[in-house]
Image 1 (tube, rainbow, N blue to C red):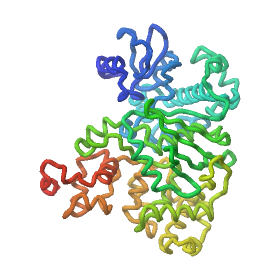
Image 2 (cartoon, one colour):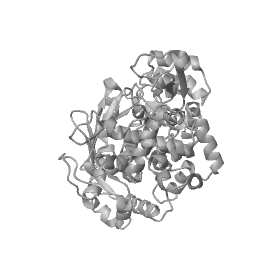
Image 3 (cartoon, rainbow, N blue to C red):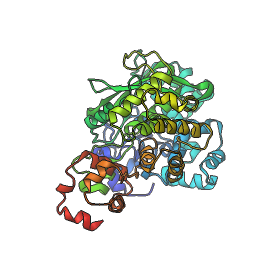
Image 4 (cartoon, one colour):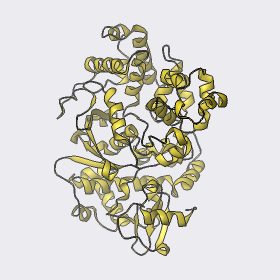
Length: 491
């Protein structure tokens, strides 16, 4: 790994959370690799070898630390990777694409050559796609062994292994211990699936929970008085599809969230955790964002970009939110879920339905949606969106060409540039989405046209979605500038 070894060792000594998930350290004297925040005694510098990923450390023969648990480290945000197609590659790998497909097929899915795919993985992660995928499976299995009481066969299946025998062989060879021996050291409880996801602080949890609560859809999701986020969730597809619920509890003092998952979703744990990471923007690097946004983010460096757990659901909610209040949009979405969503049983009285799938809403007449209060033109847009998804004309998952898909969205009658960009911002977690036509954004720049606002916002690339959040959050931003009149002059 190329870079500043002195800087990384200093980060290790300081247990600096800004480097968590960005580097891993292999300790030659122990044969173990750790996160930079590990609480174990700091090894000597000459014994430390730094890696850009857990996969690279494991390729060189290091075993994951049982104390700091590398599988809990936050991931990399989009701009840490060499292009959006690599982000999509990571998502596909986490979804198990390489369990049944080759690297060549993965490269073809991304529209690049196999050679280019391998070159970029080597540059970004110090490992090949296969090595990266193998580490993902093993670390996911390690997580389940330590945090749950699932039977070993269920652990193997959930982590993406084709057989228990193959799981045992690979786990023992790579980690030099058997799965059952690690299970004896487990802290897992018998009350279900409770897992953890780390993030890099700071994180403004009160703001995030207010944002989610104000947009909560009756029967589908909610924020409790205790600050817990609950929602229904569908995972998998076809014969492997399953549905259930999740409960997410922030543990701010430990810079992590606790995720309780319904037993019915056991086989889809990696997908569920990936969706939670996207919803809460847990992989963001707040220091990198602050460095580029500077004074705009200085007062609230913990703001994160709210994502989603289902891109189709979020897209429908964006359409329903046109020209109405946030609360009215949520009420419309709740009525859609009640009328066309699947009823499910959960331990929570607030969570009663799954949001309907595209194939369901594609069969609904716009007049039926109008009957629950949705304006007819907006209802027609929802049905056309659903049909475009079902027919394959629009992709809302694992989007590679953001601008191209925005163009497809805006070609649907009733969907304008604001709605399409908001979909990119929330459903696709595009960090550079900017809503220059947004009502509140225009209020922050009085007297400026949207075009001038967009030109001014160029200084905030590649974090313009975060700039949008900060502008929404800070209604006095313009007045706080050293020379407010310079804003118009710089435009």
